[in-house]
Image 1 (cartoon, rainbow, N blue to C red):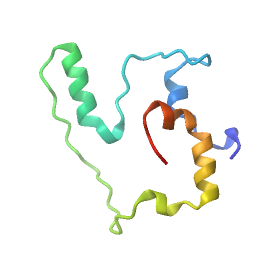
Image 2: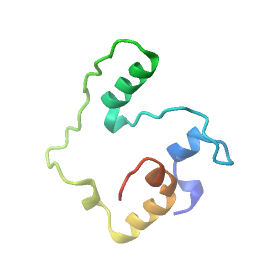
Image 3: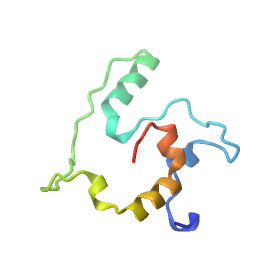
Image 4: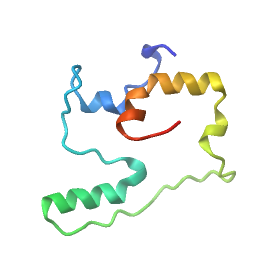
Length: 91
């Protein structure tokens, strides 16, 4: 997968071209409540409850990895290696 055909990685959005972080803390969408709670703790303010809306409406409930073959999994893994490493994802 060519770099020009994919979206910028999240890591690229939060760092300079030299890899220096531009932010102190990143909240991952899949862990929104925990992230918001941590920000509230750091700011010493009351915790805010984040409602979980717009949940996945897929009826089949299939694991996302089932939608990839080896070739596409490798392509995505290579294109987003910085996100996978930085945010502790596995693919």
